[in-house]
Length: 307
Image (cartoon, rainbow, N blue to C red; front, side, top):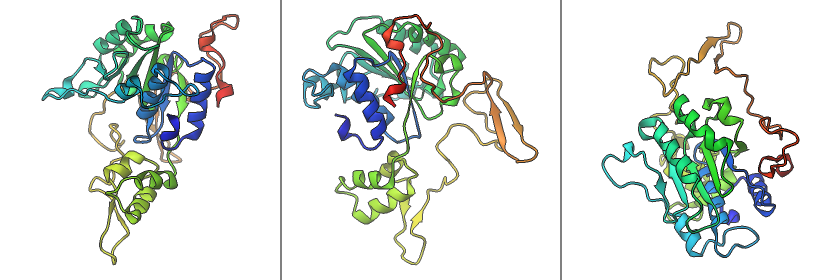
């Protein structure tokens, strides 16, 4: 159930309305900072679509489908980082793909296209999650376009990323973007309070130093100082690392992708900007430009009413 998820009440309300009205898009893009629950929300959507005993169009959380969808079967082997197959849950209609060696490959997108065209084996819909979708390169992104343009009515794709600007405009234009906000300190503190291993003082300090990321607070990436004479909080040794794979402008390290990005420095402001071309704006205006005005295909309607 969405109520069991922490934070982003606005996103919960929008997803609920889409489910109630049976207007869930075939392709969605979940964007927001790392560690704020985007993947859990995506799995909750999959549970709601396949629940055997739904309650007000939401997952019951206790039926066999809900329990199995919640369990992702990550490969347990030495070459797990090179895994290119779909990572299925215990439910045969819900799967996830991750980037092997930091790049999503063409063969993975072709697997999704193939599987998406099958009718559901057991549930009502097939759902495929693409984690860290910003790691799509040009070839794999183009391989994904066909299924994004014509998604089967019984299949849904959910792309998850913290860096939507790294995606090609052709991918962005074909997905319904749903923005996730950082969690408030109170929301993080409440969630941490449910763990017996974390005392109230530590939970409060972690919540206020986590920068809105529940994952960062749970992982203990913000360490609490035990020395009362010292600072209240201590950052990890890699303090300057924001968790991004993109090197800083001053670094000589090669990033994941270049795509011939133009990097230039503003002489007056001294700010470094990256221009990926295409003039794309992340702001969703409630319209899907690739659908004609006279097209009566409800799957790509105006979703502005949900936000």
